[in-house]
Image 1 (tube, rainbow, N blue to C red):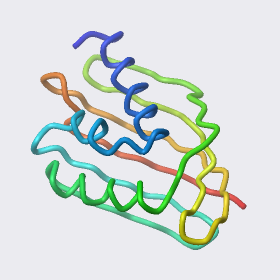
Image 2 (cartoon, helix red, strand yellow; image 1 turned 90 degrees about the vertical axis):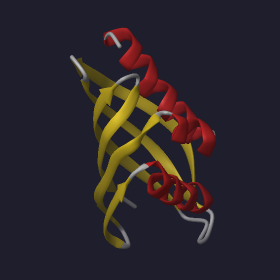
Image 3 (cartoon, helix red, strand yellow; image 1 turned 180 degrees about the horizontal axis):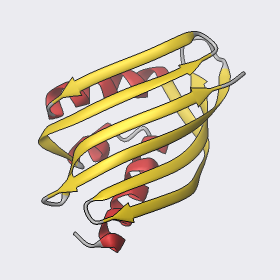
Image 4 (cartoon, rainbow, N blue to C red; image 1 turned 30 degrees about the horizontal axis):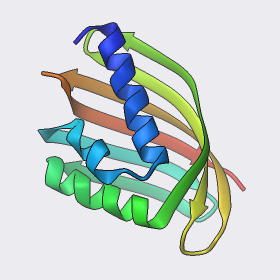
Length: 127
């Protein structure tokens, strides 16, 4: 994949998250991909580790079930070979509590053979 392809993939992933499209998100990950999330917000810290598309799907399903995104804004993407970084922000609406939390996120992504091989997400949510 070239730089433009990776940029399109990253933007498509964010759009799929905004639509809560679990199938579209999961299709972008390699079968043996790694997915890590670390962050903090009003309710504390969170750390998630998933290995393989099945584990990633389970976590993404939980996230989609729990949160709705709105006002997603891609601040910047940086692509260097097979590696990319995405800086974005959105409002996370809890489907459980009804709270709305502005959140800032940075993703580090490695692409191999047209799919996401490694995905690391860091976020800070504020009230």
